[in-house]
Amino acid sequence: MSSTAATKAGNPEADFSVSGLGNPQEELGKLLSGQYPDARGRYGPFGGRFVPETLMGAITRLEEVAKAAFVDPAFAAELRDQQRVWIGRPTPMMRAEGLSKEWGVDLWLKREELAHTGAHKINNALGQALLAKRLGVKRIIAETGAGQHGVATAAACARVGFPCRVYMGAQDVERQAPNVQRMKRLGAEVVPVTSGDQTLRAAIDEALRHWVSDPMGTHYLLGSAVGPHPFPWLVRTFQSVIGTEARAQMLQQAGRLPDAVFAAVGGGSNAIGFFHGFLGDSQVQILGVEAGGTSDEPGMHSATMAHGRPGVLHGCYSMLLQDEAGQVADTHSISAGLDYPGVGPEHAFLHAIGRVKYVRATDAQTLEAVNACCRHEGILPALEPSHALAAVRNWAKANPGKTALVNLCGRGDKDMPILMKHAPMA
Image (tube, rainbow, N blue to C red; front, side, top):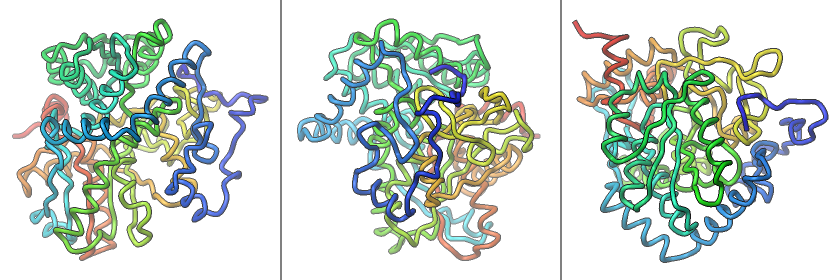
C-alpha cells in the first residue's frame, strides 16, 4: 500500500507474470464478457488486493454495495438523472476542422472537458458519492494530482451532502493553484502533503493512511483506475459512459467508427472508460498516450508501459516504474495528472494482450499540441489530453486521410500557471 514496489521473492501474489495469460482474443473475450475482473479482482495476473487487514472489511463492503447498486433500477435512474441535469451529459462530439486540415487526418474530439467542473473526473466522483450514501459513511476523502479529481469530489460531496477532505502533493498545490481555490470554494478541506515526492503518489499514500484510521466511517473516493479491487473496476464502470456515448456519436455524426482512438494515460481513468466503448471493434486501433517528459532517462518521464515492470503499488499488482532495488522510481511530467509511476491493472492487461498500444508524447510535443488546438479550434485543452493530441499528430504522418478520435478529457484553465511558466506568450 505504500510507495515501495512489492516484488519480494517468496510472495506468491507478487510473483505473477504475464506468461500466465492465454490467447489474446480469448483473454479479451473474458474481459468483454465480464469474467474479468475475477473473484480476486484480477485481470489475468494484474490487479488484486494488497491492503492491511483493517481495510478488508471496508473494501469488501464497497464491492458488495456497488454490485447491488449496479443492478438496482433506482440507482441507475438516479445516476442518469444527475448525469443529465448536473454533469451535462451527454457531452458533445465535434469534428476538429482546423486540426484536420493542418495534420491531414479526419480528427474528431469527444468534448469531455465540457462536463461540469471541466473534466471527466466528475463521472466517477458523482457515482461514488451516490454509493457512499448507500454505504452509510459519515465523510469522504480523496486524493488529487492535477486537482480535477479534487474539484470533482468537492462538487459531488456538496451535491450529495458529505464533508470532504482532499489530499494533494505540495508540489501540485503550487502548480495547480486555481484548482486548490476551487476545491476550497466548494467546501473541501485541502491538505498539502509534504512527504515523499509531494505529487500524486504521495497524496494517495496519505489518503490511504487516513482511511486505515476510520475504514467504516469514511469512504475513500479514489479518482483513478488504480488501487485495490474494486476501485479499478468501479472507476472504469462509472467512466465507461464516455466510450458508450463516443461510439454512438461517431456512428451518428461521422457515419462510421474511427480508424483509431487516443486518450492520455496516467493512472488511466479517462482512457479506460473511453476505450471500453471500442474494445470489441477489432478494426479500431486503440492508443494510450503516456507522458514522455523530457527524455527516456529515469526520473525524466512517467512512461510506465515503456519503461516499467510488474510490481505492487497502492494496493494492486500492475506495471510500475522501479529502480534496480525495486523501489518506486521518481517521475516527471509537465502534466500533474500524468505524473504517476504506475498505471491501472486493466491497462496493464490490455497492454499484455496487445489490444491497446501505448505510446509517448514529450513535454515539448504536448505544448505544441496545446498551441495548435488553441489556434485552430478555439479550445484550450488541459495538458493531459494534449498528450493525446500530440500523439495524433505523430500518427497522422503515417496515416494521412484516416479518422482519429481523441478524448479531450479536460480543459486547460487549471494549467495556466504552468503554461505561463513554460510557454509564455510574447
